[in-house]
Length: 386
Image 1: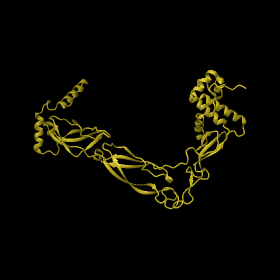
Image 2: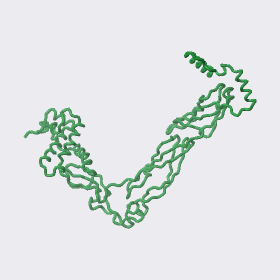
Image 3: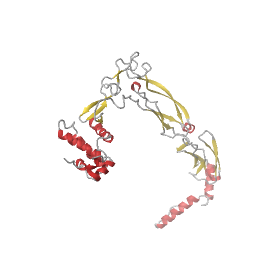
Image 4: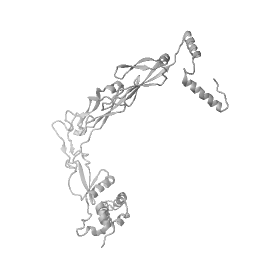
């Protein structure tokens, strides 16, 4: 009896992609699986036929040989039959993870424990929020924190068993933590329902930790905050999280940094900005102002005559350090001209005298603006108010 065409068996064309064949195979394999068709010899034969077709067409070299020579490519030493290789077993494992829940499929069945051995439940990762000042972010610091977390029980040393006793191997899985059960053509491996994957049982639990192997204690940890950290940075401390159950590995601790707002500086990456008020006289006649620096020092900034609001002065190398680098940002001084308030009678008179004697040359920007406003209204046949 001649074999059916592999493409016909899977219901795909000869130009089908690997993804299309995978979808077709998954659908057919689920339909004709022996567990869904108990006692149905025809379904079992179709299931094997589907497996054989997919095993051939999912392999690039075998598919090329089949496309050229057909079934003859695998006869009389022409490259070996499709068989059931590791690729097929891995793929079927993926299918039965979904079909049977926790189980993993392995072709052929047979006896034996889990490949990975008993599992040790890893402890949870923990989060700690740490707020620091901008000065601390600039210089870096060694911070000490306290937090309550699970640690290894000192009484039982993490075993969970009462002093003088010890856990015994689980009789259900033989200490492997996983069991296998025959499921038709396959053997399904899943977590042991008796010991829940731990591979051992405790008959006499420790009274201090109730058999968990861990207790809650307040811990003191030292954290090194490097210079140049930014808001939102996360620092990972490996193994400083919650201790796992019964000797399981500890999780990690993640410290999330936030930086307090500063009364003088605003930060943009490695650069700092400081907004400084100056008097109208200093802006008009020039002068020198003293400004703070993030390292606690101070520096002088020369204000040239005629300085306007929003004028910016750059002080190189006085910003924030760049994390894990020798680079340093800059400090930008942004000035704004403060309008005098609460004037005395004489001060008013002096300002009025100056205003009366001032010309467009003294206020070039305002003169230029209102000149354009006048032209704008005249273009519409109107008259600008002065």
